[in-house]
Length: 110
Length: 116
Image (cartoon, each protein chain N blue to C red):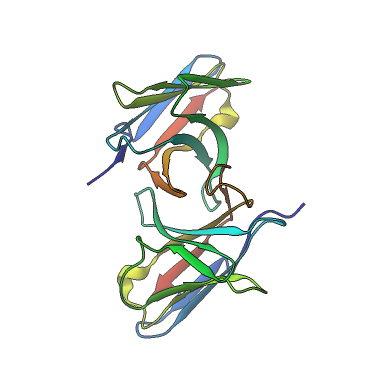
C-alpha cells in the first residue's frame, strides 16, 4: 500500500524553463511534507518543506504547493539549471516517521 | 561542521554472516532514524531512536534486525544471518532535540550492503 506516490519516474526539461514534480498521498494523518534531492551514491539532501496547514512555501527558485483536498503536492523549480539534475523524492511525515515516494529523475538539458 | 556520518560506506557479506552499520548523528542531534532503499524504490522507514530508547520500530523486520543508540557512541543497525534480499542501501538520518520530527531530517551518505 503506497501511501506516497510519485507517478512520473522521469522528467526532462530545458534549461531556464520550469520543472514541475508531482506527488500524491493517501494518509490524511501526514502533517508535514518535504522534498529531498538525491545524487547517485549520496544521501538525500533536504530541499524544502511545507506544513499541512499551509498551501505554499517558497525558497529561492523552489516553491512547494500543497492541495490538501486533492491530497496532492508539487515542487516547482524556476528557472531550471543543469545542476538540478538529480532524483527528487517527496516525503510525508507522521509522528517522526517519513514515508517516501519512489522518486522522479529530473534531467535538465542545457 | 560535520554532517551525519555513516560507516562503512560499502559492506560485503556472505549469506549467514552478520552486518553492523554505524551512524554518528550531527552534533547536537539526539534523534536518529534508519531507512532502507532497495533498487529502483524509495526509502523505507525502519526505526526511530533517541538516546537509549527505541521510539518507533514499526518498519523493522521482526527477525534478524536490531538497532540501538547508546548513551555514548554511534547508533548501530545490526543484521544477523544476512540473506541476499538484505542487499540495499541503508541510510541514517538525524534531527535535533525538541518536538519529534518537527525539524527536517538530515541524511548521511548511506551504507551499501551487498550480500553474496
